[in-house]
Length: 288
Length: 229
Image (cartoon, rainbow over all chains, first blue to last red; front, side):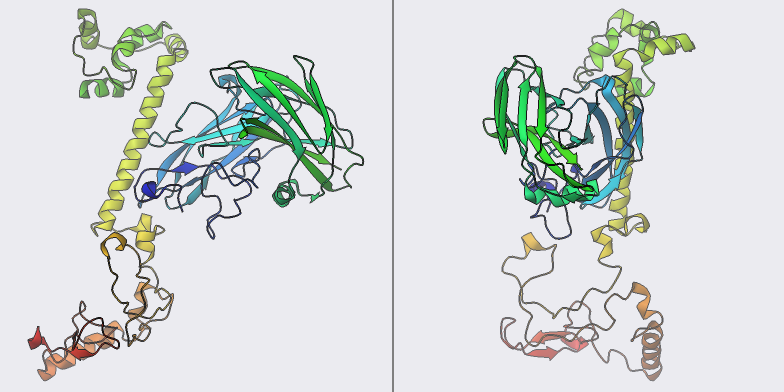
């Protein structure tokens, strides 16, 4: 079923980028319905519709493609305009930089849940990008635009993100990321660090081509500006107050009692919440 | 408004002189930006009237490079791109409309549900169905009501058969129907059976009426001859 009953019966484009994996309660054979926020078992930081076709290497070309769906009615295709940006890892909503634009593609998409994939889009990632990046994709049509200018993969079907960091255990290098406040006013957020739930692991196993194992980690989350830190096992919650538009540099260290076995992985996530509402997140896969 | 659309189609008209020197165009800000909200404003200055009437001159490559750095040129390219997309989508919708009306072949739209339902015989279901209490809001779907009693047998052709099944392999075929009609004509046996399509209960059944009510169970059907209509 399309997201809204009223929208189902018209002939305007209703575009979305599929999340990964499809929500558990999707209609039979329909996969992701385009409804946002997605069902809670779905990691918002790993959209199935946004796929990197080459390995990320600072200073080299990166090729990506985007799959989009269309819940329009009627009997004619619509045009889907797809744009992709890269960004340093962020736990909240990013403010995208035109200099970090990766590519654009315009493709026809069939109605009634039809899907289409863009041709590969290639852009160069500068050598000073840092060891990890994340990707954001937007799909739109002049008749189906996002409601706000915010980059909001959690709530807006037009946006998707691939925000997954892969490192090697048992004591991987500290991971740097930015806690962000894309709104126009100061705000308080909570950063949650925890193991990825059991229900999400099968989907990740498919993309990682590895066996999932669930392990408890020891977390140390540091605020690089204030020097404050939070330490804990199982999970860590760290409050942070950010000015309007601020990007606060954070650093996360994860220590595992044992590395995952060869060919296996375990996964963690950093979620940024505002008043218990999810704003964004990133995933961390530790491979054996 | 049409004049400004024309201005847009002519790729910027009088703005190229300023764009070519890397400057923003005041004419664009006044009349084109903000989604043409001020395009109906006709109080053009003499300078703007002169610019609109002036003969355009070709840009040099250096001027074109300078113009590429002006944000209004990006805006112009985006507007032209959206214009092209709208024309493409409009033509697609027009073709879908003509195909739905039967005025053009729907070859490009066969994957869509409107046409797909006619491409193969669907799975057999007991029919006809009892009428719905309020059928108008749900006209587009098959009725979920129970079948009438007695229900009809399955259709003449196998499930999944394509529309050409009656040409060669199916029964009745087009040739058997034609032969039977020809035989009736030759024998002078006109209007022997009323196979009015709107009134029958199943394939090859004759036109009928109920002896009692359509809500009776079972329904008692009486075949109608042509003179009963």
